[in-house]
Length: 222
Image (cartoon, rainbow, N blue to C red):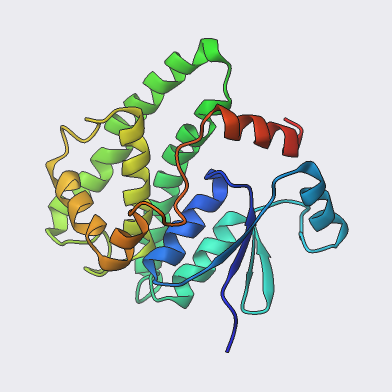
């Protein structure tokens, strides 16, 4: 029997957090080996286990996978969270790319200069409420189903919930104009595997604070 997936990354959310979310949603236990110093990263590079000298890296099924999108799509397909045919996968991919764009803006906010943070935070809220969330609200309204694609839990649903919770950390009432997304949030949050991941003490990581920013800057020389 294969061992648990092993995730190599910092103790922060970063690009690995969506991998943690997807594995947790699939009910898959995983281990983490944290990169805490520049030397830890250099060791991985020198050992030749990072295909492009970058993390995230996930050890799974005898592979050392890199590139976040490749890791996520493999997990989604392996655990039946990637639709039943090519068209459903195309929709899942489109929805995931949208939430990835929004989460990327939020992810990099703590690393931006203090004098631009307010402006960038306002842009995040504006994009969330005028570009991204209206798409998902309309999708749920148009087909009247509980999930975004195929009336079945998929990677797109997990990713959207992650994005919603990140956006709410920026502005708690960000969903005020989106009643179907509010209901979606409650529904998906109560799926047993996801509910467990949202409890204190899980492997979900807290919002990025100044301490994490300082550690990441030191490890990656930024």
